[in-house]
Length: 249
Image (cartoon, rainbow, N blue to C red; front, side):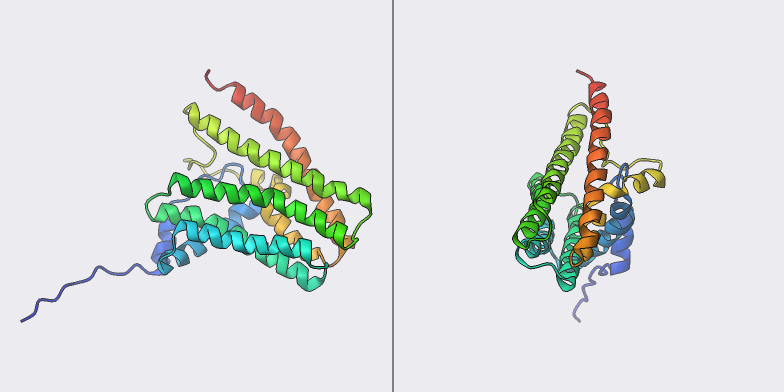
């Protein structure tokens, strides 16, 4: 008589999603789209990637492919309604997958420093590359008068400095033993702050690219988001400087 070896039960997708729901990083300061739309979407992508046997780095690479495709379309293809839909779709899919790689790493028992480095390098390239693609597209296809080209240049600078400042704040906090923004908190952060920071949300910016085919709508909307992002950086820089100044020597 042959003994039967019982295999451990295979985890279903719903169970994986429940496990991911209790392993989220902190939401302090996260804008509304990123917090309420992109993280749940990333959670679904992470669960699907887990069941497909993908690694976090593979998910990061897939995210980079979608984002790069959207950026390339902006620089190489004349503005149109289908092009705008394609750009927004690629950017939003890339952003959702960007939220999935870290969640997948936590689900698999923790990520590696190299994986975190890769994720941040892709994010840094995305932060500047998107606005440079807008600049190139506006210039190549004569979308705006020359003075308007200063808007994507300024937006590129603002996003690059904001991203660097955010990463530097986290690094200095961790170095001095102070809890970082990404660490889970006992009390859920309020919704008001997430709504107030919505104009600085990359997800909202990605959605705005559906208007690319209508420059009369896209250019002023993009400009308003740039001004909001610049105002946020100016206010946040004062706050960050004071917070870092209170860290122990």
